Length: 140
Image (tube, rainbow, N blue to C red):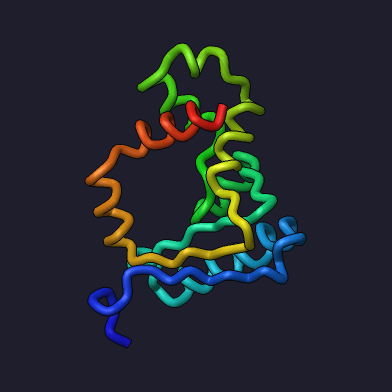
């Protein structure tokens, strides 16, 4: 009740899923994605997935289930090329998959639910490509 004016973000913690990354990413998160879409809220709500064992899904999986997951290594490499060509050249695909996955790790299985407008506002304040480049540089 109250909408965007009374709530900025909800973080759902699910520690019973901490040791079940496979089920979390193949079952729980797609069900949440499907529910948001079925309710017609895909342009209203944003969801982001975090997990202690987070691993960036394959490109093929991400093509079907993009909601809330880290970008693929190929997209992260494009970001690096834009801001740090030397780092892009020396980073393997497995390096980028690890660094991207690391950015979605958390102490417990979490789902962050945000208003889509918040995500859009954050994107206007910062440029994703430079943010991910900075984070990958720090991780590697």
